[in-house]
Length: 133
Image (tube, rainbow, N blue to C red; front, side, top):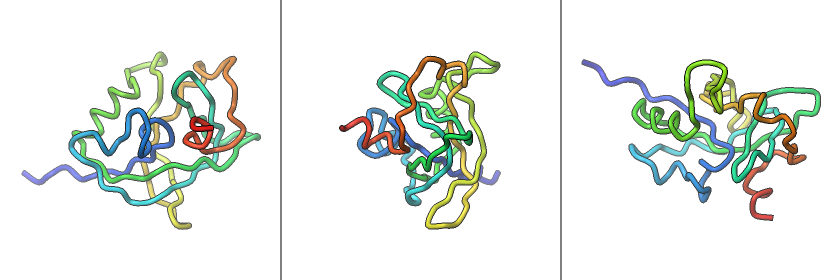
């Protein structure tokens, strides 16, 4: 039986290198591909961020792209509290992320829009800079 294909994931918050949930500390280990960018709005939810894609006030949101296995994807789904239906903390999306100017089709965890009501947009697209300032 052939192995399941690896997938790409874009991480923009606590899963980034050095973050509270650094993807590099998880198993099976991911493979770093490069820095990536998407357009959206980054919100300060609590000790973690949430990203909504697009929007009139969208900025360039930066993050890291990793090649992951299906087994690691299951771990990420648990961290991001993916559950069936409208109550999920995040929704898993497949989007084009730009890495070195070229689009790569990646998984991305977009915050449930209901979770950003009353939350503050951080005004730029880099959670690590915001969180460490």
